[in-house]
Length: 371
Image (cartoon, rainbow, N blue to C red):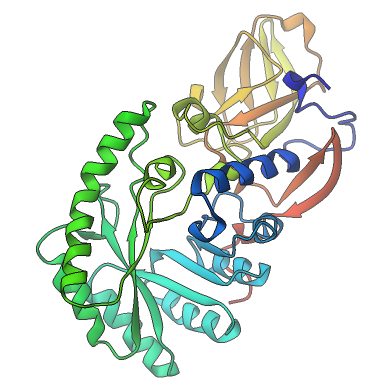
C-alpha cells in the first residue's frame, strides 16, 4: 500500500460508523520514538489518560516501561490490573476519592500508588484516611510551574510546605510533580527557553531540599510537548502520553517530534442535503468539540472542504467535488484533540495491514471500574 494511503481499510463494510480506529504498528513506532527521546525505559512514566486501554499499557510494559501516570481512580485501577509496578495519580484527590485510593492500595499490594498534594488541607485529608486503614499514603508535591492550573505556587512557602509533610506519620514524600503543559511553541528553542525559565524555581527548591538533608526527590516533569526539553535535564523523569497515538493539534504544533498519527475517526456520508454539501455521522458525540469547528478533525481522503456546522450526530461539510461523493462513502479523520475523542468511544477497532484484527475496550473511560 502507498504510504500516503496507510490508513485505508481493505474492506470497511463490516465496521459501523462512527468508529475509532487504532493502527497498532504506528503505536509501536511511537513507543520506539518515546523511548529514543527518553534514552531508557526507566526514565519514562507515561500518562495513560489519552487512550485508557489495558492493551496499550501492556504494549509498553513489554518494552520495559513499568511505571505510569493517570488522572482518575478508574485509570489507576486499569493500569494496576495491566501489570504496572507504579501508578501516579496526577490529580489532587478530594472527598471520597482518597478513600478509593486507600482501597486501591489494599486491592493491589504489589503496586506502588502515588497521589498529589499541594496544600496542608490535602495532606491532612490523606493522613486522616490512611491512618484509619493503617496504611501510608505516598505523595508527590504538585508544583505550580507557571501553568496556574493546580499545584503549590513557587514562592517562599513552597519549601516549608514540602518539609512539613515529613511530620505526617501516615505520609511518605516521594518528590515533585512539575507539569508545564502550556509550553507548546512550535519553535523548540522558544519552548525550551520558557520551560527553562519556569524550572528555575524548581532548581531553588531542589537546592533547599538537599541543604536540609532530606531524601533526594523523584522529579516528574512535563507531558508530550515538553518531553524533548526535560529529556535534557539530568535526573528528571518524563511523562508524555498523547504521543502514543498523536493527533492533528500536536502534529501541527510540534514539528520536532515526528510521532505518527495512530488513531483515526471513521465516518460515513449520511446525506447530501443540497448542492455542495455533504453530511457525515461525526457529531459532538464522536469527536472532541471543545475547539472551534475548523479545529476538530482533519480528513485524510477529502480535499478542498470546509466544516460548516456540527450537532450531536451530524457534521456538515461544504465540498468542492460534491458529485464525487455518494451516501455511504467512508471518510477517515485525524482528531485535533485525541484524548477527549477516544473517551467518547467504548472500543477501538485495531487495524493492521489494512485489516480489522481486534477490538480493545476503552476500559477507563468509566468513572468507576470496581473501586
